[in-house]
Amino acid sequence: MSDVADFPYETRLNILFKPLEIIDEKKLADACEYKWFNQTLCQVNGSVVRIGVVEGEYHWHKHEADDEFFYVVEGKFLIDLEGRTVELAPRQGFVVPKGVMHRTRALQRTVVLMFENTGIIPTGN
Image 1 (tube, rainbow, N blue to C red):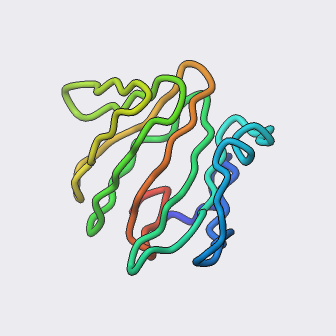
Image 2: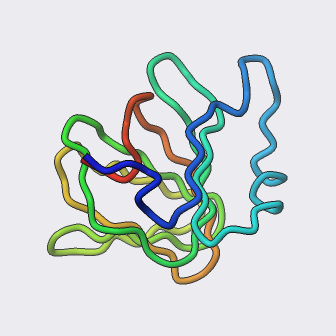
């Protein structure tokens, strides 16, 4: 199993906001200085919402027990699957089902929201 510390991404799994707090996604994204940043924003029932500010590519991986939902806020987000690439523009989303090998990429700075189970390991398993 991979640990987030084993990869060159800035991944923060702490929950940044509690219920009843306003989440300013734009302010967080604008302040980001990393090429690949992932911050857990909040928890909703058994899931978390994360912001990703990305440029470049993530490694190939899969999540054996967890689906992932990606929603593009700004930029263009590519999801490579075995045999095809899905391209998402702002206001588009996509679910990668559990067990599916995938890699995410952004050729330019892109902001995405991700909805995942609380216990998911972002780097895959």
